[in-house]
Structure formats: structure tokens, C-alpha cells
Amino acid sequence: MGLSDDPELQPLLFGLFLSMYLVTTLGNLLIILTISSDSHLHTPMYFFLSNLSLADVGFTSTTIPKMMVDIQTHSRVISYVGCLTQMSIVTLFGCLDSLLLTVMAYDRFVAICHPLHYSVIMNPHLSGLLVLVSFFISLLYSHLHSLMVSQLIFFMDVEIPHFFCEPSQLFHLACSDSSTNNILIYFLGAILGGVPLTGILFSYTRIVSTTLRVSSTGGKYKAFSTCGSHLSVVCLFYGSALGVYLSSAVSNSPRKNAVASVMYNVVTPMLNPFIYSLRNRDIKRAMQKLLRRTA
Image (cartoon, rainbow, N blue to C red; front, top):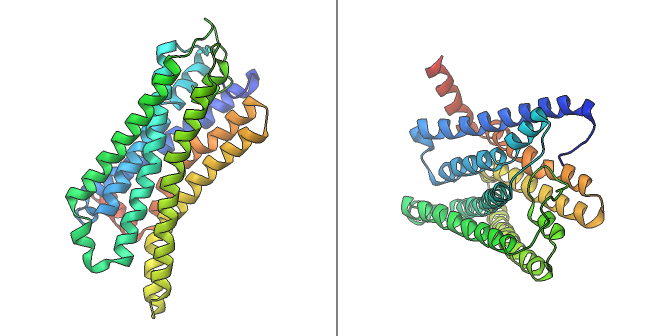
């Protein structure tokens, strides 16, 4: 059903989301290109960042292009298989984002709390393994969503009050009893949302504790500055996700919930490249080198 039925708003929505999608895609691809082209950035932290940028591109590419096509063609139809596929990919990349942010928090924890053992602990083998494990957990979570939705019975024509196929909306629209599936989904969501968030909070508690014991002001500033970008992204990601959850719990309007989801699905992935490029000297320096090389 999209975000609005007002015909006068459709060109504005198309232009707005096209701009946001281009900024998100180009910004994240620029981060990936910058990291891959500069040997000084071939470290675990930037390896995880490039994977996060790739996940963000996949996340937004699953929903925004379809919505823009719907606006242009004045058709808001998606097939049953297409809906399941879109839901699976959104769930996959959303979960992957959460797990990668946790892995990045662990990387900062090791770098600040165990600096002498950092190169031994965060070796290329472990870094690659952490990304692969994050991907396979996300894939399993996504597959469970698809499996549960595929067991439900729907009417032939169903109106989804959202701009993409969101799992909780599909459960509400099912003809068959979905109470068990709802409980299972919320349980899995609590685990895959709560455990990573707990890991991030634990990592930053230890980081703050270790940093406060550093005697020099310069050392404290350097330690906090290396975590600033990541912490900003964590706050933005989990803050917007919590905002969407609370708005859906408080508000009975599906359309308002869909609008709130824009922050989580579109705005957050768009802002990530700006946060890392503006707050990170290494990224800015590498980008300047890349731009001079291509100019």
C-alpha cells in the first residue's frame, strides 16, 4: 500500500527516495572501494566496515527500488513468491547488520583492552570466520522466517499496509492461526537482537573502564576517537530499530508504523558512510588519495 495514497505526494516521494537510495548506494560503495584500494586499510576493523557497507547496500536495494517502480507504474502488486523473497532478504541483511556491529565492537574491545595481543587474536583467519558465521546465522534466521510464513494461509488478494513485505504484517494478515509463529518470531528476535546488543554493551563497558585507567589525556582521546564512529552507528541502528518497535507497540496505525520504518530501513544505511567518512581520518585520507588518483 506504500506510504501515502495522495497522488500529489507521489512525485515528491519518488524524488526523495531516489535521492536517498543513490546517496546510500554510492556512499557505501565508495567506502568499499576506498578500503579495497588502500593497503593501509587492510585491517580487521575496515574489513568489517566494508562488509557492513555491503550489507547496507543489499538492505536498501531490496525495498527502495521496488517502491519506486510501484510509484512510477501506479501499481502496488507483488507476487506471493516475490513477497517471501523480499521478506527473506530484508531479514537476512537486517540481522547481518546487527551481528556485524557486534563483531566490530569485539574488534574495538580487543584493540583497546588487549593491544599487545591484537594482531594475534584478530588475525585474518578469525576475521573471515566471524563474518562467515554472522552471514550463516543471518541466513538461518531468514530461512526460519520464510518457513514460518510459507506455512500460513492467506486470501488470494491481501493488502499489506507497508512499503515492503514486513514479517509481522504478514502474520497479522494470515487466515490461519499465527499465534505460535508470533511467539517464536518475537523469541528469536529477542535473542538475535538482545544478545548482540548485550555483547556491544559489555565490550564498551570494558573499553570505557580500560580507557579511564589511561593516565594521559591524549591516550584517552585516541582510544575514544577510534570508537566514536562505530558507537554513533550502533546508537543510530539500535535507536531507530527500538523506535520502530515502540511505535508499532503504541500506535494502532499501520501506515504510521510504515513511516517509522523508513528511519530504520532507509535513513540509517544512508547515514553510515557519512559517519565513518567524516569522523575517521584514515578513511578521509584514503578517499582523498583515491579521488586524486581518479581525477
